[in-house]
Length: 513
Ligand code: NDP
Ligand code: BG6
Image (cartoon, rainbow, N blue to C red; front, top):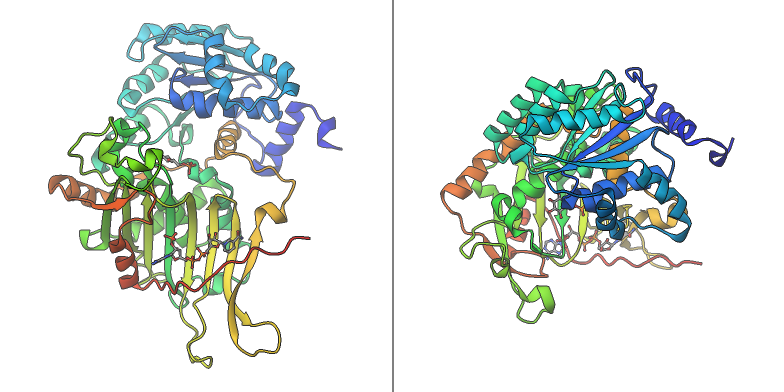
C-alpha cells in the first residue's frame, strides 16, 4: 500500500512500529503537546514550526492538540503571526495550516503560581478526551524557572495517560547546579518521563555514527588505538554572539557547545558496541566512555575570543566585546580547543580533539578520524594519512581520504577520496530536521537520542574543574579575527598531540553528467 493511501494515524502507527516497536504504555490515543514558554524565541523559531511540519506531513497521532502557556497575554492569532515567518508555508498548505491552528489554544499564567497551573489543567481536561489524554510538556524556558514549573506541573497537571517532560539545555552551568536540577526533576518524575534534548542527537549524521560503526565489517577492526592517530570533533559557526550576548556571556562556548554537542558526538564515536539498540543499552555504553575521561587540565586547552576584522564587512567588523549585550571586560571564550583522553583498552593514548567556535571562517560540524601512517613505507614519504570524515553539516557526507595510484602511465601514489555525499546519493530524500525527529521520538517513547542523567553528570564532571579555573583565575582568551580559523595556538596544540596537517589535500568536485 502506498503511503498516500494510509490515514495519518496509520502512517504514524506504521512508523512507530517500524522504528520503535509498539508503544504499550499508551492509555489513550489523544495527545496534548503543551509548550511552556510559548511566547519565547525557541517556541517561535523551532517548536511551533516543528509541530506544524510534523502535523502537515501526517506524522502526529490524529487527535493531537497544542496548548501554549506563558506569562504574556496572547491569542493563538498572535502566536501564528509570530511563528509564520519560520514555518515555510506554501500556497497548497492553507487548508492544513487552518486545521493545525484550529487544534491550538493558548493560556497565560505565572510559572510560580499554583492557581495558573490548576487553570492550565482545567483547560487541558476540557479538550475532547483531554482528561485522560497523554501529555507532553515542553519546557521552552530558561532553567531559572524549571524548579517552579516542574513542581507545579507535577502537582496540578498530571493525567491518567502518560506524562512526559521535555527539557532544553542548558542543564545547569556546572556539576553542582546540574546535580541540583537533576535531583529536583527526579524527585518529581521518573527517568523514563524526562527527555533532555541535545538537538545534535537528532541530526542525520550523528545518528548515522552507530550504523556506520556497528553495521559494517570494515570499520570495527581498525576503530582503535592501534590504527587511529587522533579523533577530531569540530563545530564551527561563521557568526558571532548576534545579540544573544546576554545568555552567551554567562555560559561561554564550552558550556554552550562542547559540554553537550561535542561530548555527545565523542561518546558515539568512542563507545563499545551496545548489546542492542534499546535506549538504555546505548546510553549505558555512552556513559561508560565518559567515565573513562579524566577532567581536563588547562595545559590541554586553548581559549579564544573574536575581535573585529578591520577589513571585514558589516557584522565582521565588530568583535565580541563590541556587542552591546556583552560586558566590556568579558573574558568569556567564544572559541575553545580541548584535548581529552579516553583511558580504556580501546583508546588509551589517542587524543580526542574537541574544537568549537563562533565567528570563524565557515559553518561546519564534523567528526574526523585520522589514521596512523602506513608502517614500512615504500613510496618515499609520498603517502598522506588516511582520514575518515563524517560531515554533520552543512551538506551531509561521509568521505574517506585515501591513497590511490595516479591514473594513467604513472606509478605514484595520489591522494583522493571515497565520497558518499548525501545530496548526490540520495537526491530525492528530504532529511528531517533534528527537532522533528526528536519530538516524534517523544511521542513514540523512544529515549535513545536523549541525554540520561548519568551522562549529563559525567559530562559536567569532565569540564567543571576547567570552567571553575577559567573563571576563578580570569584566564584571558587569545584574540582571533572574525572570519579566521581561530587562534594559531590551537593548531599548535593539535599538532603537538599528534594531528598531522599537510595542507596538500585539494578536493575536486566530481564530474556530474
Ligand atoms: P583539509 O586537508 O583541508 O583539512 C583537514 C583538516 O585539517 C581539517 O580538520 C582542517 O581544520 C585542518 N586544517 C586546515 N588548515 C589547517 C592548518 N593550517 N593547521 C592545522 N590544521 C588545519 O581537508 P578536508 O577533509 O577538510 O577537505 C577539504 C575540503 O574538501 C572541505 O571543505 C571538504 O568539505 C571538501 N570535501 C568535500 C567532500 C564532499 O562534499 N563529499 C569530500 C571531500 C572533501 P579546519 O576545519 O579548521 O579548516
Ligand atoms: C545551540 C547553541 O545549542 O546550537 C548555539 O546554543 C548554536 O549557540 C546552535 O548556534 C547550533 O546549532 P545548529 O543546529 O545550527 O548547528
